[in-house]
Amino acid sequence: MTLRARFTLFTVFWLIFILILYNIFVYFFVIRVTTRGELQLLANKADLVVEALRKQGMSRYDDPKLLTDMYNANEMLRIVLKDKGVVNKVGIDKELLNLPLGNPSALKSESLQVNGQRIIFLTVPLYEDGTLVGAVEGARRLTVLDSYIQILVSVLAATSAGAIVVAIFGTYWFTSRMTGPISQMVQTMREIDRSGKLHRVKLNGREESVELQQLVRAFNEMIDRLDRTIEHQKQFVADASHELKTPLTVIGSYADMLKRWGRDNEAVRDEAIEAIGKETERLQKLTRSMLTLAEAEQDDWVSVSRFNVTSVVKELAEMLGTTFARDIRVHSSNQSVPMRGDKDKIRQLLLILIDNAIKYSKEPIDVRVRQDKTGVKLEVTDYGIGIPEGEIPYLFERFYRVDSARHRLTGGSGLGLSIAKRIIDLHEGSVDVFSKPSSGTTISIHFPRTL
Ligand code: ATP
Ligand code: MG
Image (cartoon, rainbow, N blue to C red; front, side, top):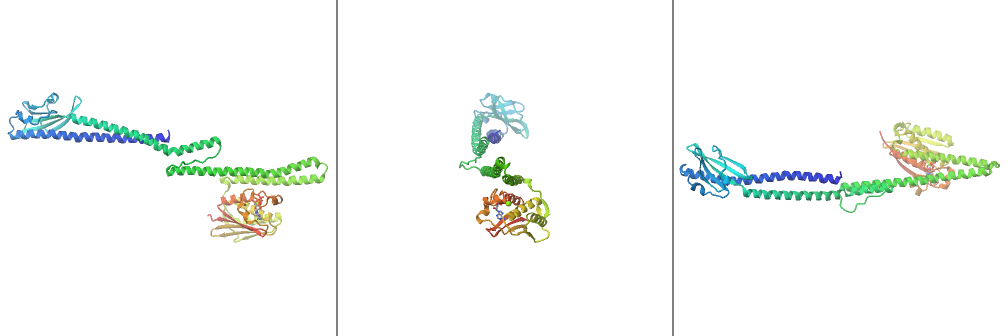
């Protein structure tokens, strides 16, 4: 069932329920109040008759003057004696006159239905010297009252029906307005599903409720984010293909060369084998980096433990120093600097930074580990070629290299620092780059204290 139908049904159901209660209350209240008025009239007359009888010493019950003064077309009055029955009566309505005698012993009023018409019947007991002798009985038709009640019922029915119709249309209109943006969003989603293109939902200026505005805004933000992610992916695929193309072209041309002249010319053969080997290595490195980046997108990429950063740095510096025959100096504020994080990923991060420092400098390299109240600071400083200031903001972008021509020699793919950035982000750290062309670079990373 649609939200609109449910809302309309709900409102109408409650409205009908409330109207029924209200109408019942009004109906019975009006009947009660008016009947009481009629009864009062009759009671007054009966009282007058009793009063007159008392004045004439409780005798001459059959005196016609007693009752004729009170005569009314819709009424009947009679005096009933216990032993003689009806001794005096007035009225022209046969039905009223033929009403069965009441019980004279108590003052009593009741409402009767005779041939579908309401009648009130009253009995006032008569006492003579303290003993019950009979009663004055009166009856009155409620014809006028009944016609008023009929009008009241029709008015109540008409207003209730009107209210329900207005409620149905009102709720329907209101919910249409309310659910409009939702159906618009559903339409947009279907359109996205059908065409494969992302669209935002447009709010057409009308003043919608805050919640709906928030819903539409959240939806649009999600679309924007998806849009950016898809754009990012496209860019990545384009860049990756471009990066893969160059080594593959080189390998292809050398293979051609080998085919043509490789058999006879030893120099050509050696050159080709050497080049193919190098490019293959570059391709391997590139695909490895790309795989790492893909893995790094997953949330469970890091597995957190507590470890000593200084020992990781020292061990890595020694290993790289020996491998590349470079002087890598480690300065640590403490023998042991504890940190919570993924040990392997922090090692990988340091490897990326020291690898850059080795590649882009010839001087010794300084690695600093410092611990303070706010957390752990890692710094890798080299005294090499440096980075122009304008390039620093782009360093962490995928495939970004400061001078791509230069990197055909150093063999970088431009993915190292983007992997580094991902590791820093996953550890909620921050990074700063200080660099000056031809005097060196410092990359400084801060990890907040996590206990
Ligand atoms: P990869 O690390 O994937 O093998 P790469 O070293 O070229 O390749 P990144 O580590 O991401 O890529 O670095 C991006 C670019 O930033 C490098 O190409 C280089 O131009 C510049 N760069 C990074 N570190 C330094 C540094 N210490 N000194 C000078 N330039 C640097
Ligand atoms: Mg690098």
